[in-house]
Length: 382
Ligand code: GLA
View (cartoon, rainbow, N blue to C red):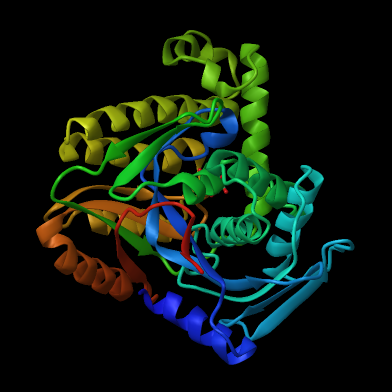
């Protein structure tokens, strides 16, 4: 039993005097390649990681939902017949999920429980998506709804867009819902078809948190989305997914320099992502590493979402023995980088990179050697 699972079990027993009726788990994620492509109807290649949100719960006879967050020592309580936005931080992900599920026509039951997790909050590893999917999985279990990961991911994204007010794409919710152990998933963000691709043999995926946070991220993220829409309009297509590299090059000079660079990132990144899935099928860590390195340069120079700490982290990572490639991962502007490393070198890599980064910046980075895990699941159902 994982440590967090034990924590929610004990926390539940302390609060409610009996073991929980069920325990659900929903993971965070790291994206190997395919950044800012999801809202352009393109391709992403994330994996669910062995850091997750757990909820221990039992059904109630009435329509009340009560959830206590062990990490925050706070409880959110609401009635399913009267869900009101309260700006309650993490609680709004729970309320938003309930609201959207009901609006989609689902009949929900009330429940009570405790929640805890080890996905670092705000680091860019999708703690929000993990909480949304853990909530969705709990509602689904207590209300006896059939579980469809892709449909739930869409509803969770809607909750985040419409209730929480963050204009994210579908990647984080999809991978938290339908991730597969030992694999990354190539997700077509238009059709939502997925293809599981194994991690190259004898490699480790290492997440390097720069300990910098994305300040004004919402405005910068939305600005990027708008620039992509402008570019798609120029090409006369619904989304940049529909523009090939050849079509782009033929007309690139007609675009202003900023729009050109934004479009070039998305169009080449889609290409790299599909290729990355192909080379992973062949077990080719060297090619995958090269594609990751290329992706970082594109994000640094064309999409301009790397801060100096992310550039430094990637540079340090890529100069270590056993590192195939590294890049920023997630929305950017702070947060984490991801590196693909030879399995035997992973421990010393983690140690050396953290040390060198700290020496140069004075910041203490967190480093996580990650395993690819399954998406949201019911761990215990009594
Ligand atoms: C955030 C968003 C995702 C995606 C990434 C960038 O994680 O939530 O939808 O757009 O940024 O790839």
